[in-house]
Image (cartoon, rainbow, N blue to C red; front, side, top):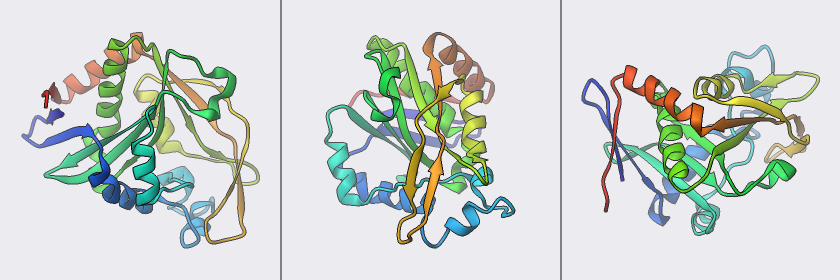
Length: 225
């Protein structure tokens, strides 16, 4: 278990998620899911809640699917809890088919991250990146990669908030991945996605994150259990 303490005394705990956490993670997926109820405003460039402004997830997992993924040997879900309530999660994996020829045995992939709106001010993406990068580097991994979606023409909406977070965590652009066609659940609407790949080299990202978190008065400690 990882303990996180802020300068004002607020605390978080980060731990590997288990079956008992699947329902709470599924609720976070549902919270961020772009579906038949939300897609019109999310892909409308004139909407204040569009994909550029607040992002979102096109492919959500339910509780049963999550339990199956939790037991996949090359995947790990990290839960972030505040006062025992799920505030965020991160899905990391030693493989990701989206990356094809870019993939190698020294890379950890950041698959999905969702943070509750009420916790977005807490630098949780930076904290989770630091935790994953330092743990992975101790096991011989050298970098992490992730993809950020950009909705293709005619609207061209990049998940801007995620891109800003990635760049501020030490990520750099690593090219385009093959275009995806995603069906909005509950509709006959398909959205073309142009994914952008980003890479984090641990030798530069870990010192940067250490400096950022120290500057914000965040301390991170690990407890064996």
